[in-house]
Length: 316
Figure 1 (cartoon, rainbow, N blue to C red):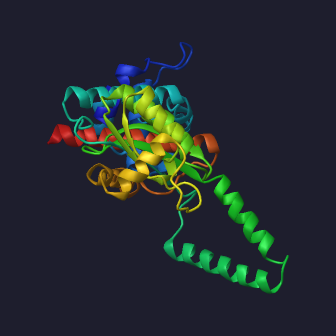
Figure 2 (cartoon, rainbow, N blue to C red; figure 1 turned 30 degrees about the vertical axis):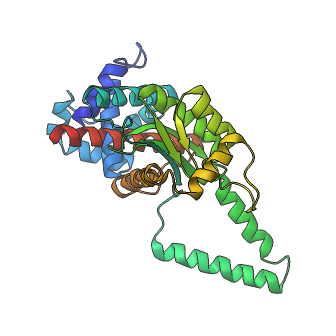
Figure 3 (cartoon, helix red, strand yellow; figure 1 turned 90 degrees about the vertical axis):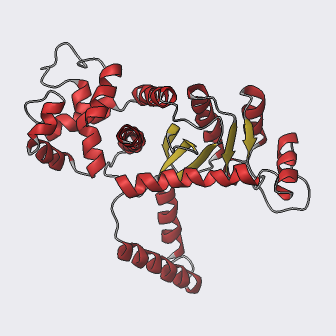
C-alpha cells in the first residue's frame, strides 16, 4: 500500500478538480484500489477492511477510510489508459535503475490469456460443458432445435471474453507492456503495441512469441523498425509442405526445423508464468461488469503485479 502510494504521488496530481472536497488525494485512492485488488474484495468489503486498519491508513496520511462510492468513482478516473502507461513507464524506470531487468541477456516474452466474466466453480463449469455437449448431440438428432442456440451462446461468450496480452521480461517477470481488450480474436494485431512500448522502456534485444503472433509484418516491425530479433514459429494457416511466404517466415521455418533458436524460444514459457502469477495471486475472474471497466480491471491487475514484484525486490 505504501509503495503504491509513493509511486502514485510521483505521477498524479493531488486532486482531480479544484472544486472537489479534497477529502482524499488521488495517490491515496490509488493505494486503496491496489489493496482492494490484491485481496480480491468488493468495494464495500474494501471500505470495511480499511476502516478496520487505521495503521494502514496512517501510513498514507489518512484519518478515515474512503467509502465504497468514492472508490467506485476513483476506479474509472485513475485507470485511464494514459495513466496506466505512465505508471508502467515509472515501474520500468525503477527496475532499470535497480539493475533488475534482464532483457539484455534474456528475451522479451509475449503471450495472452483470457479471464472469466464472473466467479464460477469447477463443478458448475463442468456441468455447463456437459450440457453443451448434450445439446450438440440433440442438435444432430433434431436439426434446428438446439444447434442454433448453442452456437449463438458460444459466439456471444467469445465476443465479450476479456483478454489480456502482456510483454514480460523473462528474467524477472516484470510486465513491460500490456493490452486489454474484449473478444477472443487473433493475437497478431497486438504485437506492434506490445513490442513498441516494451522496446521504448527497456533495451530489448530478442522477442519471442507463440504462433498466434505469426505474421510477416510483425517480423518486419521488430527487425527492421526496432532492430529487435523476433522468434515466432510460422504456424498460421493450413498445414502444407510448401515453405511459408515472406522472407522472415521462411527463415523461421528453417531455423525451427533445425532447432537453432531452441534456447531462446524456451523462455516464452515465462510469459505463461507471469499470467499464472496474476491469476493465482489476484484471481482469474473479473468483478467488473461493463466492458470498459473490465479492461481497466485487467490493467489494474498488471500494475498490482508489478508493484508486488517491486515490494519483493525491496524486501530481498
